[in-house]
Length: 312
Ligand code: NAP
Image (cartoon, rainbow, N blue to C red):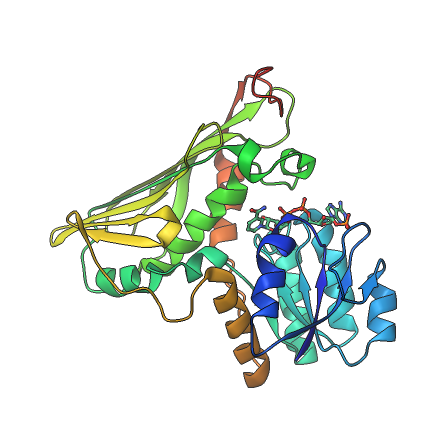
């Protein structure tokens, strides 16, 4: 199937373009971006023009930041195209619901992707936890914002999610691997004095079985990132490391990596299946947890953020 990529920036270049190029399911047929392009691929700067000029392209994948994503997503659906959304699927829950309704009404596929759910050991962790009683779960998601979001001003603007941009990846795994739904009971959001979104956050959750569930997100970690989820049960302690790429149970590495390598190749495989089956996949639970953390969160103002670590 022919596909168009919209918003040729960091994640499009790092992950989407190689995943599409190496996929037997997809042909990258056009890009839409004001500045970016992909060598050898027809490039548009306006989505409306692409939709008009290329009726043969039935699928559009949006790699824009969350705030500017709703209008092009709706425009593509209204033009009868199937749509794939980067995470988080929108700036607000209401706009995600609106896209979901529009896709269903038109009989089109909408895929709100969560790339971290496709990490190698997430399915194995889900299977191991399925019949266990959870006693405690803690998320530790710490990374260097200057390494992962160099020069990206949008993450600090309203709707930019701040540290929840990576934090929602952890929550997408937690909501996938736990058999029970959680909800946020409290949060502390550390917001730099010159920013609109948090650089760090601590969350507490209600678990229906009474387990203690917490999460710590921090963008001020220098050096290597820590992307870990630890689940304690009477039968043992499971740790997902490296964002779900590795799994340990009681200190021993377990599980076999999934056969199709890589998070984004799996996302594109799934999109091909969804389109073929005429289905959508829109799970907004990770986004709901983040929205509730913003609703309940106590703000603490912390040191201003600077791209230059020496000035911070
Ligand atoms: P980015 O490079 O800052 O933005 C992607 C592209 O979107 C830009 O190159 C720009 O293309 C377009 N764009 C940016 N702001 C815009 C605006 N206000 N209006 C219209 N177009 C705009 O962002 P990214 O890091 O690729 O992230 C995009 C999405 O992918 C986010 O939701 C993020 O959470 C997700 N994601 C990112 C990463 C990562 O490592 N960075 C990893 C996984 C997922 P033009 O100027 O050429 O139009």
